[in-house]
Length: 344
Ligand SMILES: [Zn+2]
Ligand SMILES: [Zn+2]
View 1 (spheres, rainbow, N blue to C red):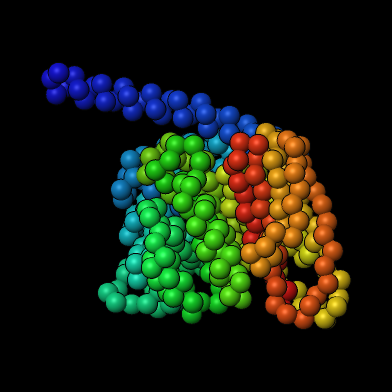
View 2 (tube, rainbow, N blue to C red):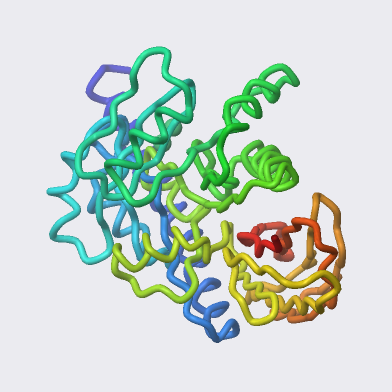
């Protein structure tokens, strides 16, 4: 086969993958739209982490933004590696804005709307890298902190050591890079493991979901549900800072304790009553919903395909620090993980 013919064939193949995934993702968008009606609380679906042709992505910011509309994601951040030049391509779009992905101490950092690109310095610690990043942005997180390949016990130990000095951190627990239909299994598996390890060590952790797309087909694999924000980037960033969010592949989630939303810190007297209220919705049906504290399941509900599950759980404040979070799965196992409510 000649070179021109081979190129034409390759282009047709690429177009057919784009069309096939568009059809699938459109159904995901319809599922999310129906879930929102059942959930009855405003959720802004955000993809904080997308790549475009401004770095190593294969789609334009506009193409990514079009895909986002299809899957029901309200706002994307074009967070290219080491640059914010994509800002000018996002500016005319109503559902896109800029971010940046940089690296520091072996980790990748995500920054939302930084004033300039954050650049790594050799031999800096993660704490120093984060401190410098925070001067450039109101919101920074660890992108795919557990990586995509084999996570050996030694590497797990190195990660935990690097994050040990931090009191609070936002991190991706779901990342959709290099997968067509959902989050990379390793980010879901080990990302949630790492979140629980950090929570049990007394830290505050804000979980995020992102597509980390390098081609528009990955958009919608995972995203972050932001509760109570408007679609404006400033409102989304403010609400993420408050920790009012959940990482998701499809279902919607909410949790409060004594009326205080996710991300809140309660300071009850010892013995005081804590009333947890949780709610999950997925128009495709839920398989289960769990309430988790200290890495243990406190309550598990088998939803048997019901589209909405709400419940309450009563606890007593023990006088010791605690955290509570909820997670759920749709009937096709797509998951969601809430940010915790903290008791101190
Ligand atoms: Zn990365
Ligand atoms: Zn990335």
